[in-house]
Length: 296
Image 1 (cartoon, rainbow, N blue to C red):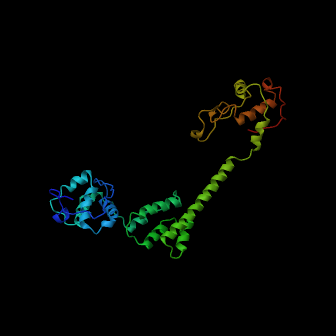
Image 2 (cartoon, rainbow, N blue to C red):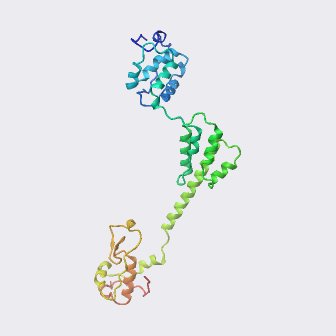
Image 3 (cartoon, rainbow, N blue to C red):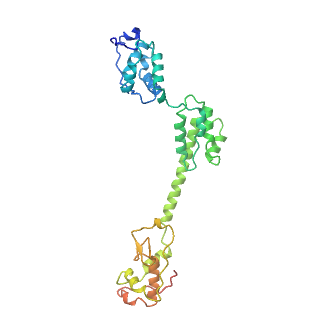
């Protein structure tokens, strides 16, 4: 390497030859907008074979800088750097505002399981928080992981009753409970699905026995609703936002389903048919069902 004019390095660092067989590693460049400590750790790991070569560590480090960081390096006073430790110090001090906040073990006790959060999500949150703390005592980690669970959760009981459980063992036990919770939720969803796909009720079965007409039953409604004996139902109640606003029922005078598909209208129409009020609309080619009473 050749001498750089006005270099921050001393002459000792300036004049060096790379070790035999040295191959320049490929570095992720630092431009001054990230944590300097993280970049130094990354540099140390990449240069692990040459950590004892202080001169080489200094010279190669400069090649990992770009943009603002490279500009900063060239503002250092001539021959101001005596060692890599000095270079690391001034580098970290320059970009101190970018350093990640160092968390203490107290931070772990703030990671509380949310009631809506699954055990698996809680474990993920705790691991992310724990990764921010360097050198935390494992007993403290295990206690924090256990104590921030709801006391009524079965996992809390297992952890507090377990003898000298390590953090890894606590994670493993939590995984089993997560699988158990997911299995229960899956069974619940399956049960609800089966309930929705229930077998036809007597009311549903009655759909197949309704009288056949020669015109759509919505047209019959328009003909009959002005008769003095005709009884319209009141509009449907409930959460109207959940109804299908593309469908309208003239019998209920509301949204949610069509007139031709309205079960209540079919039941009422069957009553009127049995009373002989719809004879002109009957489909004579089909056999009428046995007369029955329907309640609205």
